[in-house]
Length: 213
Image: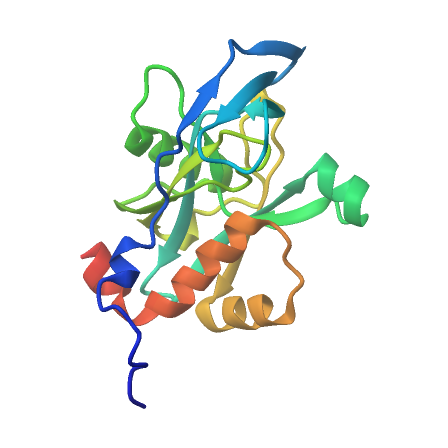
């Protein structure tokens, strides 16, 4: 198929998220709990919106997510844990996810990914590779997640895991790459990060030895 005559070969390279010309007020803290909830008044230069706009943001900060894979067994390890929002919105509170968590103040994302993988699955990563960054819900949260893939031995995976100090109770799930593809196609998983991670896995499964080598 021939390219359209009006296509610009540099267009794809220019289609990226860009800085915005935005002036922000000082944040007003409107809620404090596990995370702070802040409100801002915003003025956007060049916007069709006249005057200031008001937006709220949940301050989640830097996090990591991990796609743990066992190349010998051809398996990926996911987790299931309770999520209140899934329970309220879908009556599906026992959600399937990838291991994930916040980066502590004294940690690097790499160190946090090593820790979270072991805490939430029981398996210690032999190798860890960063993939890309995502914002799971930029409309209401500042969460920025670095997604990793980890080489593990699935025999180390526990039946139950999680960090008791954080009131976590995770149930690790070992499945083959083929089952992961079927699960994704069936549409039964609603966690956005898990969907993105599984899509990456299915696209790149043949390259995993190279990526983790």
